[in-house]
Image 1 (cartoon, helix red, strand yellow):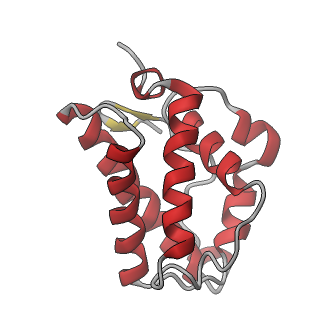
Image 2 (cartoon, helix red, strand yellow):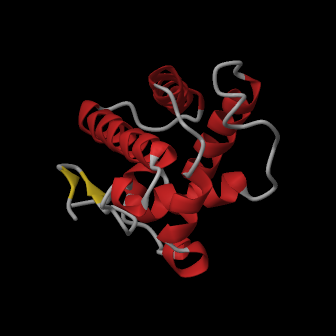
Length: 148
């Protein structure tokens, strides 16, 4: 079966998606506290993470490592409203980026975003190591969800 990465259109399509989403996040008043200014490598890092999650190259793990993801979320104290706005803007960006609209693909993306925003929110509010979500590697998402 084709990976989500290949079905989405590979790096080019995912980079387009992440750039559109990131521009929306930077301009959004609810997300502005989480994205106060454009970071030069943020779109690249988001693309690497999504690509690896969807069955593409493992650049995120090799170049940054999952600990990087934990560190950048710690202390952000993501609210429920921010978590939902992130998900809404991300899903909105799918159409603008021209990603496939078939229901199985969109369901897999929705589940991935729901899971990822939950992990990010939990890690953002963690006061101790024990409070962190137990996930310690990039999840490998398939048509049936997280296979880790």
